[in-house]
Image (cartoon, rainbow, N blue to C red; front, side, top):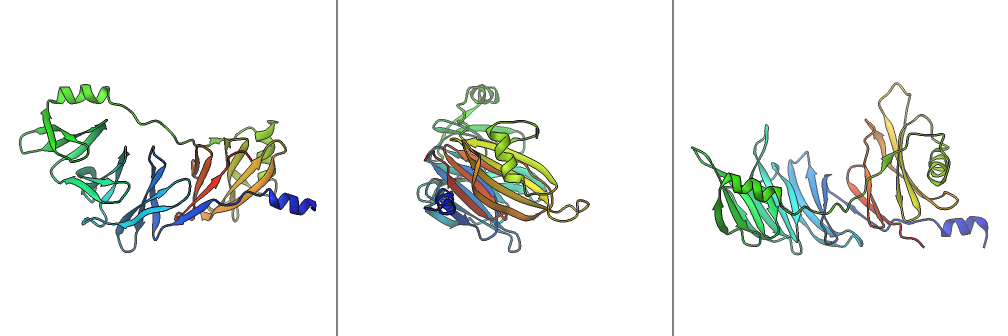
Length: 283
């Protein structure tokens, strides 16, 4: 086998990709291996939601839309339930209403149009309801939305302080600042950026013996705010570049944390609408 063929055989390939109709506005992982995607079409002012397996890209469901077509967004994912909320008004970010969606099917489990979600702990949803005189607080059943009890604000604060937190499963890159360093990471950055000109931001994320390098370079004169965003993967020990792609051809500003990892999978969003996944497990 020639050296060129051997090198090509070691190239990493895209595991899967998923494209939205509009902008991929939000991407929320669940603890049980799924992604929830918020897909916003600005011109038509409508938003839909989708759910897919984050290892295989298999779509469980997509195109979910509720009665409110625009002023609605992902609140959070808890266990196997997606929670959505609306906004009180277009010019106010305060939330209103609760929608609970079954992650497996995309079906509406329950909704509450009079309350707004405060937080979730285990099998209970804690929510508030405003009336003319004051605000009341309630404990709701996670699966049905049925009211378990009304609770005092002091009790709510105590429960909130001791509520279980979701484990952080997402790993983001760190800014690479010292070009004079040596070692695998520094060599990887050098290999990825050696043909680039006027690099303004470089980030690195290490995954299973690989270094994922993201960097921005000016796509025109340095006086113009136009940048080309690249991503590359280098394998140890020789820092061989085994994957490259352009995330954005004309970014208006360098933005950190545009790629991330969960376990051995690396993800990035290309052109604001294509979610791309690579499996970087050792081989």
